[in-house]
Length: 402
Image 1 (cartoon, helix red, strand yellow):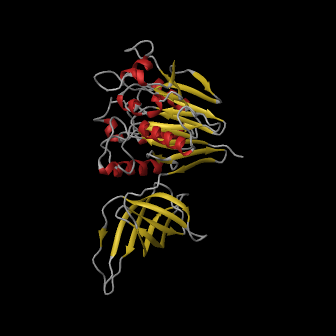
Image 2: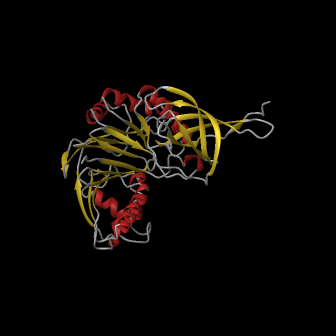
Image 3: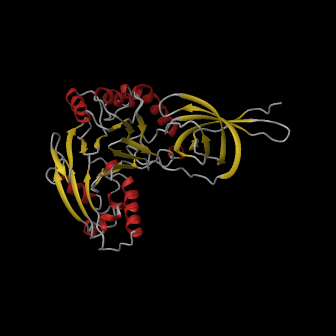
């Protein structure tokens, strides 16, 4: 039986969480990822506000299995890149930290501002008075701490971990995880321009199956108003991916002021230079196996859909980069998205043009929409694909036609 490793994105924003409506599609929680190896070892990367959602998911799974307190324990390794708030804000809201049957092994660096036991100090400070009403004595889970530094290498139950320094105010670590089924590099919060660290990240990323990289700003912002802020752009990510022969690039740490359309633009530009690019999205998963990397996006059900049948003309790009245009059937529709039946198989996170023929009894009109692909599976008919899309801007109705 083939074994897989799975990476899930629980928080993908940088700097601060955001709840604005035009950020919903990619998500508003700050960094947290879950990497489960083929042997079932759980690694948690950063403790931003996405950590709360991960904790709720773990508790739901335990209840589904019928496990009660004390019967089943979570044993996880938590690797923190650095101590800025957006990477530790989720600590007080992660329920498994408060349950005695669980065990957590923490890794990060010794801060020159905090000295020894930096990570323990940071964790305990998140529950200090008067900033939080519950103190650290309520963290009943078993905890161990290991201080690491750039250049360190160690093993976690069959997974080889390598750390490297990044260029970020008050320091930051990148991590590489080498597993029998593939390799993942997590390199967030970094700015290009320091030769030694630019070289280090390229070495760390060499040949990786997945590179998760800071793309908070546009190249123009990075060269002007955001220079020196400690972040990077999609363009630098593309350069690293090409030079290091990376197989998949994931744009990460989206700015809180970047709307979904802005991130769409970053992704589209990146794919022009490096086709195997993705934009991190809450709930997105990447499965690593001997066959390569498979990407899945969360299903979007933002509104109630109505069953119907409309004819439409759909334009887009297939998984292998070929443009297509075809007549299709819209099988259900909401104000937020639709389910299409297509002969072509469009690429996830690619943009489609959907022109729906909304004909009435005595007149005909065309509803033109732009959409992004969030789901693609075999359809009801053997030769078709069921494609879920989310609309990415307001629809424009053409005038009735004769």
